[in-house]
Image (tube, rainbow, N blue to C red):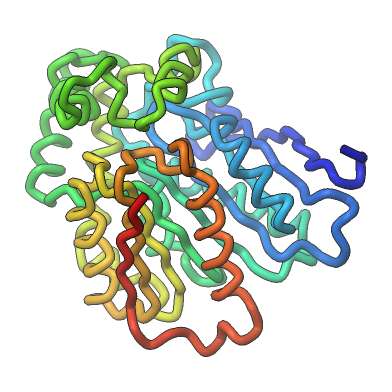
Length: 336
C-alpha cells in the first residue's frame, strides 16, 4: 500500500480534569491521497475495563472513509494510568471527570481539524453512558451521535449500587475491589451465556476476540468500589427525563447493539433508552439490533456489516440534504 493510501495514527496526551492523570489518546487521520477536507471528526468513547487501542480497526475504517477519528483512554484505563495497579480505579465522584475529559478531547480535535465539516460522537458500553450524559451537557454543536451497546438500568438499581459502593469506599477506601459488587455488576453478564467457555464470552461470539481480551494486560481489570460508584452515578443519571430532556431535539441519534447483548437486556434496555430519547423530544432516533451478536458488535465475525451500517447512517445524516431529517423514528432487527 502506498503512503498516500495509509492511515496515519498519532498519539497525544492532555491533563485530566482530575488534576493528577495524563489522558492518553490516539488520532487517526484519513490517507493523504483522499481529496478535500475530512468529512468530519468522529470521537470514540470506549467502555469499561478496556482502552482506545481496541478500536484501531474500526477507527482505520472510518479514516479510510474520510473521517478524522479520535479516542482517549479514560482515567483508570489503558495508558492514562500511572501504574498497572491503577487500572480500574476511579474516584467515587468521577462522573464529571469522565465527561469533561471527553469534552477536552473534542475541543482539541475541533481546533486541530477546523476544516472538518461535522462532529460525531460514538460511545460503546460504559462509553455510551458517558456519551448520553455528555449530550445533556455539551450536546450543542454535535452533528450526530451513535450509542453502541448501551443499557438502561433502573434508577432504583443504580441508587442501590451507588450507595453500596460509596459505603465500601468510605470504609475500605476508593481503591478497594469488592468481588461481591463485581459479581452483581460486570460479573453478572457472564451468567447470561449458557455453556460459556470463559467469564467473558458475553463480549463476542468469536473465541479469538475473547481470548485476545483475556490476554490484554490493559483489559479486564476488576473495577474498584470508587469506579463502581462512578459507574452507577452515570447509569442513575442517564435514565432520568431530567437528563434526556437536555439533549438537543434536532440531534440525529443511532442506537446499535447485539440482540444477544446482556448489557442491553437483549435489546429491551436499548429500546427503552431510545424511547426515553423520543419521549423527551429527540426527533430522529433510529435503533438497529443485530441478531446473533453479543456485546461488542464491532468485534463480532460480521463486524464489517456494522461498520458499513454506521458509515451509511452517517452519510445519510451528515450529507447536505440531511437537514431534512426523517420524521419517523425507525427500529431495525438485522439477522445473520
